[in-house]
Amino acid sequence: MSVEALMNSLGSPYYKTELGAAFLGDSRSLLARVPDETVNLVMTSPPFALTRKKEYGNESAEDYVEWFLDFAREFKRILTPDGSLVIDLGGAYLPGRPVRALYQFELLIRLCKDIGFFLAQEFFHYNPSRLPSPAEWVTVRRIRVKDAVNVVWWLSVSDNPKADNRQVLKPYSDSMKQLLKNGYRAKLRPSGHEISEKFSRDNSGAIPPNLLELANTESNSAYLRRCKEVGIKPHPARFPVDFPRFFIDFLTDEGDVVLDPFAGSNTTGQAAEMSGRRWLAFEIDESYLQGSVYRFQEVNDLFPVR
Image (cartoon, rainbow, N blue to C red; front, side, top):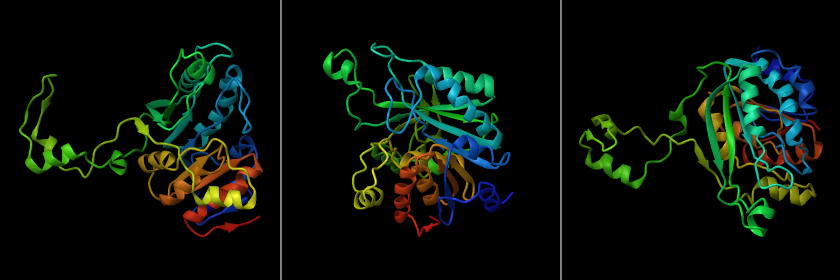
């Protein structure tokens, strides 16, 4: 099935670009209209399970796992055999207690045991600019340190999903650049590892770790400026565009289809457009979609349909 046919199966988009389309509605009904094995990557940050309700909507930690599994069954169906599901999840404390809820780990087990996903690798999204929280335990009673990491589950349909870490290499450190310049003599490390001459081969960059350090300090983007100009409240829980772009570049090829079923301000769609991927965005809150249009002023011309 062509990407155009895939988009047509979803009906009229809220807006579209040269590479993708955003749709207004409940993801459960929209997902049901996506044909089998047509999406290469589901990349999303769903509403977290929190002890207090947020304006963007969230389920309680007690109900979260069952709520999410309804979506996960559809993700498994629409993903290609070499496709991936990447979920960014924040943690939660139990109500009134300085101990953690386990919903993230319960969800991971159910996704693998019940739905049939494989855990390809776990990542950690570290935001060094995050404010101290939860305030009661961190800044008032001083019995916990601030939470600054979200767990990120990279799940796959098979045990050999599409992936290429050469697409996400990091610049070499100064010490590595010096080593490449001067050469490296093969030897046995104190740890017992034998480092061969291949260690001094220039591979155009360093393989990144599974800790993604990305500060969320967006303050002057076209998205925020235009939202302010037209009086639209920005989405309160945006992630930095480099976060979805890392996984899009890592796990897909140009022309592949990326879907975010909880699109919010559609950072995933923007990242996909920047990387030359086709994309689909589902969002139930129209005000968030209205504002998300302005993300694409930084990418290319937009063709709004509403």
